[in-house]
Image 1 (cartoon, rainbow, N blue to C red):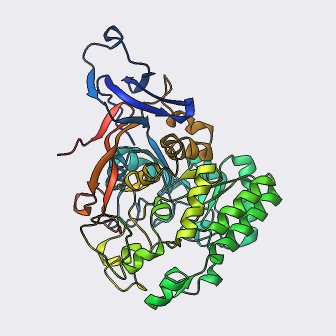
Image 2: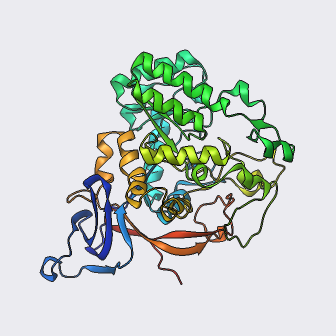
Image 3: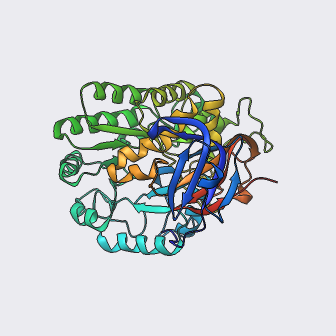
Length: 453
């Protein structure tokens, strides 16, 4: 997973330290030593810095715990032509993510101990950031029979999901939620009522009508969200809702929380930044060198990009804490899966390398604070994953030295030719973003550095 040959001590000097887990937002120094945080706080005296320390000047930069992504697709095993653990984790490092939880829609599915072990071995060999597998809820992700959830827990999975497909059978979902009471890990459901999708490829609405494309109504998500909340309330089990995209879903979660239902949820960068108008070629006031692209298949994602009203509700839910965290749902595809008609194109966007830049627009626009954004990328996902992940979401002394250093004001243009990911499928090609990762560390090792031209 991560090379344990630690580099020499590293001093990040004069950064704005944003560590929501400790309630810190102040300028200071961060010192790492032997793979752990030695200090993260006030400026250090020269006598407190070990000889041979590598110093990184960080005036104007932000130092934060490394981001945790509890929902991404690394495609390995089975779909290495789309992504591998090596390329996916390299992309993660460029995006400031130091921990990834990979979904089980692989071939074979991550539904037994042997496949978990395969993913762990390949991660040990090839990954530059931490990788934790998520186990399937049902055998083969076919929705017919529960996987051996206890065996998967013993093998090292950190959650359960059939993502890419919902757990469609309500009784199987009920049973899986019941098992979470003993296993202490959430079931992450992909909220999609297939009977309401009707072959849709984008959000139902006037834009789909204008483009002549079949739409997916908001109720396709909200009906499944409502069902799962009811089952979680019935069982007391641990439910996590993946990639919320509608205003109605936010309201359903808000109401469930008021009733005491044990539920957490996530939102993706694309659903906070993009709308369905992008499929029509509209990019608002953004600067884009690529120009508008009608029927751009890189905008095809599930859940679909929605209206501005939905985006506003998601941002509000994120700010107030109804939505616990941000997860990328990084879904890389090879060119052939996207250079087809909109109806035939695969669902999914490559997100890891553009996440921070797009999310920083919320900070620059005054929609959320920088501390809130970092919280939703660190503390939020760690709480979903459980107490064992708390040490990855803070810069507290003695914790693993997983951190990101980024320039919140650096402007850069998305150029997919420079992606580490095999997936170049993003509608942000040519778009100018503001906020760029310059250094990522895992276990005190510099796994990515880029200070620009």
